[in-house]
Length: 546
Image: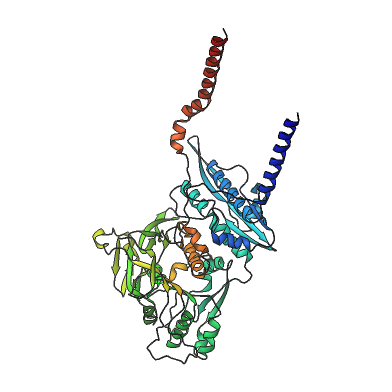
């Protein structure tokens, strides 16, 4: 009796010690091949800075397609990883059915999905959104971003792979006290604000934006440079006026001091109003006086007009049926449809990007890292300028032998230590703290000023990512926002976009075809085995004790 009592006491003490140790020490093991539940050091650093509760509301609760229940499961498991890293993370899943109008009012639009169940197609609506709350601030997170995906399964896979970046980006935005600043340069004949509204309003949710005029350079260039250096990034959006030498030196020294730049340059003048109104237009070179400046950084914007057989559509009136005008969509080869670099976070999984009357770029032999971001298809044609472009040519059948110029570089990322364009030249004004070589810096040059230009519908800006006539979706806004994020990213957060995850999903056609077999296999086989085991067991037992 005493021996049994000692054993019981020993077991109880052992269990108690194990519980104490398990509450003091915690470790999770990620056994997945793609390490989908292993948090990056960037995410763990962001979590370490949380000093109070971070509340996460996820609107993925209720009845929705089985494959998107996978997104719900993966999101829950990822949030559990965040909570394991920092107990201040608290989350809950909310059924959006009763608050749909409120969610839509707050900008969380639903997604309509096509569902295949038992070989039948049906429609389903879900709200793939999460909302963060921290210190009286809130931040929305899309759990189903628009990506380049051939199937719904690919879209789901991309969404799961983007979970860490989406949440890490949201946590960074909601916890940062001083957002970075962006200057939209003006006084250079740039695009009107209303035509950049879609792009800038998206940036405004993350950064502080301000217009900055270069007009003051003429009177006090040193003061203008000092004020410009306060901005982390400058956007040059389709300038049409010729840059003065003083303005160029101001920009040059801004870059030498570490200022990031996003160049959206149109080296051609193409009046599309006359194209639509008169049926033709003249495309001719535009002298912006930037060639030497960009040349010193390792890139040259050429005047060759690019036509690409892989092009977006243009909607035109094709006739009348009764009193109704009939519209038809035509491929317009002057508007290339470009797929971005699949290996770079600014363009990975981004929808095709529409360019309009673009030229091509050349990179130069400089000690600068050059990463192509946008490249045309191989079926291109280069045209010299000036050139008359007629709208009726849209109906002409293209001669494929003419489209053999090969792939053309249309946007490039430059990274490294840039040399000043005025290193061995006479300077237009005396700069007190002139710098010949920059600190490590980066810039993006795009050979199309209209890449960020949104359409107008009844005088109001339309979404940059959608064509108002064809409703075709493009990746322009996502690409530009990703580019700004990359240029201003000091901790490598944008690199999380390169994370890849492979989900193991069922072959729906095969599953439906073999449905009866597997139902029989999973129900009849276990019962048959159990009956056989019982029969054999009883037979052997009777034989043994007979």
